[in-house]
Image (cartoon, rainbow, N blue to C red; front, side):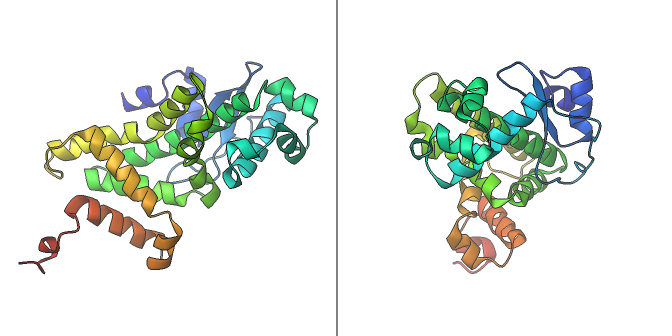
Length: 252
């Protein structure tokens, strides 16, 4: 049942490819399916399907989206022009507009591709553990395993959301929720059921945990902790036991 839910919307062949490799499907403006290999394999997601090739159009779209990612991580949505994206991607402005009618459409496609990849990665990571704590550790490690620029992409939803009106605004929020907080919610419900967590609202706990982990990605946290595992330990200990001195026996 887990696999069926995870790959809902994909055909049998596509779902099989996704189970064996770190690939996700995106549909470009021409209606073509593009298969994208994530930047870094985690756990069992390390196979490479060399027989899957992209069409020329899909390759162009992938290049455009990669160039947009690089520019938009460093600067806000309003500061990056379509001319700059075309130049960075090595395509003409006409070719860029052939695939994307507007910067908004391009931005949504970029975020959709990235968040679909992250959802596949995070879902697999969560399934690797048994207890609530083990599953959250696996998820957090998968998040930290991403290149810095890929971690930063997920922050763009909050940073740039004010530039978008409906329905684009709602779509961005929905994509973000689906890729991270919503897949954590059942893990929190399991923790409550198994007695690892106190009785609370699972949705609220999932958002709280995401916010806590994101704090560990800042420059200050990097200066405090020697490595990623130390960050994970701190985040999990803080989430499961809190910051009260009574938990470690030093309180009154």
